[in-house]
Image 1: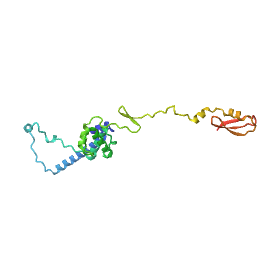
Image 2 (image 1 turned 90 degrees about the vertical axis):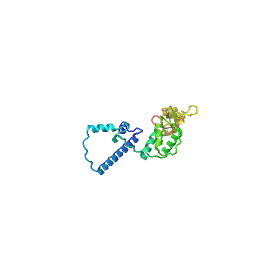
Image 3 (image 1 turned 90 degrees about the horizontal axis):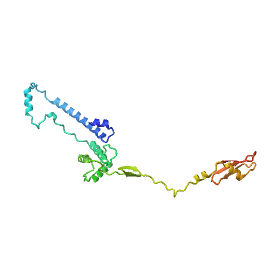
Length: 235
């Protein structure tokens, strides 16, 4: 049953617990096989018995009361969970009811204790200890649905039972001031040569001159001896 669960849900919330139970069952089976082998080796050779007759079988069946069962049908006692298995089971159940312990690893630390304390408070249970205990595990298994309230992190809000990121307020247009650089760049002419010739004029051999346009950008102009016309570029 556990192997079937792991095959279908390899990352399910009970996957780690199922793997621990499989290992526990294997160890129990190996110990039982060893015990039987030792008992068989120590037992004296059985005395040959006569073959059972039909009459013997009828007597044996008739001698059994309704409450009696053959010795081989008596179920073996359940092996108690180890400390790690119990911690893993408790962590799994706490996560299931919304009391988050984080990663289920069988390590019963401060986060697991805080989650158990929150569970006791929200469920109205007076816990004598915050250490793993089988009775607490039984109580957790009886809980259905979420017990601990959902706590959202920073910059999150609770919406429809889920934590979602809060929206940042959009800046209003009343207090915003457009960037001077952006405004200046938009107002500069595409052709700086026209402005340079207008300001400097036709001067032969004027050489390189630097001007500042009212839009805030600088332009460099250089004269042409042949035509006395300036050629200007933004810098």
